[in-house]
Length: 393
Image 1 (cartoon, one colour):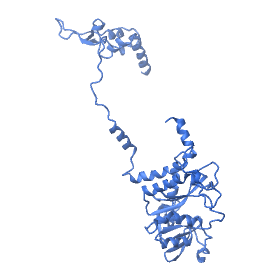
Image 2 (cartoon, rainbow, N blue to C red; image 1 turned 135 degrees about the horizontal axis):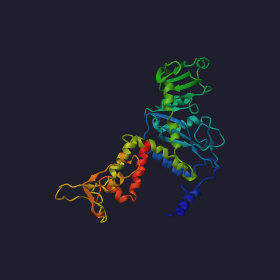
Image 3 (tube, rainbow, N blue to C red; image 1 turned 90 degrees about the vertical axis):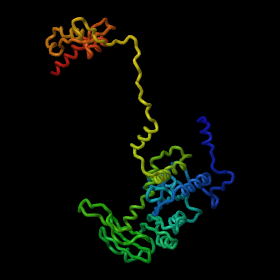
């Protein structure tokens, strides 16, 4: 397909029938109508390909978008500060997005006061009664939401804003030192106040109030760092959406038309890692390439068939000597040099070989044969080497 043809198809590509679209200002209008089939398709594939683990963090994510849009958001804490906000329910171990909801602004003229809790209800409704634990930050968490999730067979854990209704007064008014904690329990629901750098309120229906060793050591006191179990679990399992945001940074979003598709690309990475038997190292990749493309069997090599090559042959025997020798042509010339110090390096030699192509000239096997047939002025070349040796000496 020609490039221009592909660009034309991409320009006029429609995912939905615009003739049946409702006015954007009418009540109940879908602001994602044009891409709704694609969004639903991606959600179905996320449900089909992978089932998440026990711990499910819920948090905000940002799909980069700099163009004009009615529901474009600004979140300075995200890698992409401007874009389309999404609520994601991820696997805490690998960041796989199992459920997501694109935020398109408030519906109607009324402000949704329980918006965060409604997002958690919608994203987690298919996981009720299956032993999962949902983690969330203070934007979503509330005491009524945790009690509702518990009745539906779903555990929950998260930090809580200090002005939320239902926090016991004796916890809120109590002053704590750094590292101290206090809690109150109502059935399976525990409310804890913990002082780390600041005072933090936490809710949980899945953890106890005991302290655990985090495995870290205080640099000043060299003592192990101990934290409440609920704090350690929240810090450990709430990183799923952050891992998805990190994977999102590895993809380029230059084309606005492809951003929805490319946003789903990082989701395939945890799926591929989870279905693989093990992580393939670089050495194993090289080994596979070598085995798939073996080298051809080594033959005898290319034979030299030139007719004008110079070869050394033994000097034929005479009546007086069975193995006669003659003075090497190169060694004789160099040994007769009258330059001071030359005789220390070059001595007179006799050779048992001769070059018939050169007229039967006797030559040593190495290096005289090569010098005589390859260097035009071999005497000057050898003397230059001798000068270098004398300089070194």
